[in-house]
Length: 373
Image (cartoon, rainbow, N blue to C red):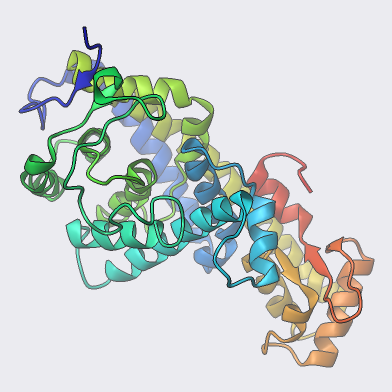
């Protein structure tokens, strides 16, 4: 007898939410997001200063789906400037993470002209699967065949979860999109329902989990809950992966939308508080280093050097020297000073024509939440 859980046909959006249970969780979650948005608004060039957090989110969201690369490995790979398609399993993992970041950038750019919609979802998916596992699984197109979730290679009869029939997907995604743009008593509850429904529909042959998590900051941004599409949700979900999957499954198995919403609100509150702490630490570091870089280098280009390090906390010395914002002799002098002061640390020494690879440990360790560098 099959133990598979099937998609909750006709149950979205739910009409029986237990608001008495959820309201006590809604206030703290919204307040935490608002506090985080306050610091987001205070950060100059947030896309630069929070660049390590954006990369870390891509790393952790991809890790939920089985990748093994670390943030350091991703940034080192990027610093090397490799453009060939991945040739090893590790490089393939890194490409998935870089694709995640690129898809976020493209979606954000598209949202200057379009509301968050299926067109953006499809284009983001196409980028996400470019040249990585799943690239042969119809990138940028909804699936036209069945798929199911379970042990690798299992038949559908042994699946843990069977999403909606492919023939019903277009209508279901239109319903999902309409709900996204409709009015709601609370935007975070609306977002929790959208995320659960997207994962239950499983509209693509691959990449559903990553894309579903990517849509969280994009929705918060569109709803004007945050001023930049920078909300990092995956750290808690990665460390509580089993509960995350079980809560999603319980929606279709037990019609437990309330349990899922309660879980999601808790995650949002916890991650908003963690995001706030990291953003505050990064802003504090930046403000301290603005003064310190200037005192050490006595250069009008000190801030250019600082901004470079924040946007590329692992980099090749040759790229720093060729940055264009700093005359090369000045850049070399600044680089030498910052290395000698221990602000930049060599990960790999230069040799012959090979440039040294350097890291900015103070910034990277904030993103990692421990002394990883």
